Amino acid sequence: MRSAQYLSHRIIHALVVFIASTIDVVKPSAVPGGIFTPIFAHVDVTKIAMMLGLIATHISGAINTITFNKIKNEEKEEKMKKLFFCLILTVFLASSCVKHGPFTVGKPYGGPAPYGDGIHPGIDYDINTGTPIIAAADGRVVHIAVADDGIENGMQVVVTHETHFYTIYAHLSKVAVKNGQLLNRGQLIGLSGASNNYNRKDHQHLHFGVCKFGTPDCRRMVNTIDPKKVWLGGQPQCFDPKMNYSVEDPTGMNKEERDKWQQEDGALWAEMDKYPRGSPERADIMKKILAHAGLRKSLPPFLTIPIACGDYGKALIEESKRKQ
Image 1 (cartoon, rainbow, N blue to C red):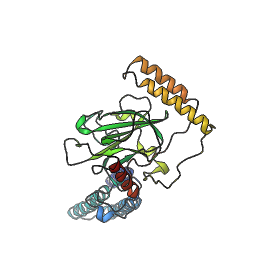
Image 2: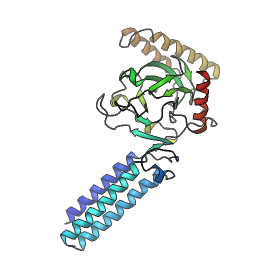
Image 3: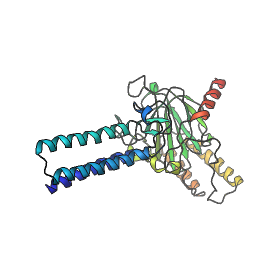
Image 4: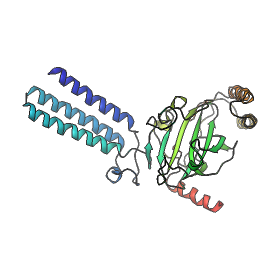
């Protein structure tokens, strides 16, 4: 009897820990998203995680009561079914409203994927066609090409953040940057809208990934970094154009020295771009880039959500229309 009780406790505990670990601690905005978004539009997801813990505690208490009071088997089974049904329903409701800011996460990092090593190497945001995609941090554009899964899935842009890591923005219908261009956090990279989301042409999304520097294949999870580890402030948050994100340069370089370093860095990336991927010339230049980066020894940046939010997003859409 005691072993059955212990096992039940452990199962519930494992379920709650797993679910809570998959819920990002963010505060969703009241915008269309999951099927239960109207109910949870103003709910802090932290409270949902706490609620799951409380429910687990109550269920464990109920199991104690059922076990030690030696209720008839039929009655015990019926009560257990009801208790587990309540837990599963709560889990379903909580998971249906996972968001980053106002954006619904359609496929999380680490979920199943029909490519690479079968594990999703980034985050898919369910967003409408024409949504402005922005730089998640200061960096340099180092690659613009057709998305890995074909022209029908649009363009992808890769930005390097010195030699710390790359960020990848895939399934773009329009690109607003050039190869080698320096970007500031929040600067427009392009517009979403070219993804058919595995042959579902009515379902658009942005694929955002963080890839280890120097790795050739960002379609494999082993070559990527969990975005949770590099969110600014420890959680996904929208870029605010009114906020000053600059930090004191830990390298001791003044502006003139930083500008010179960036020019030299840009020249090396431009030189490497002349050679095909996998060539020995490209490998040699990459070594020079790494050696040059050693002169700065800068700290890795932290990221904001790669999608423009609120009024800033509307302003970028209007600006994009004027330039057409």
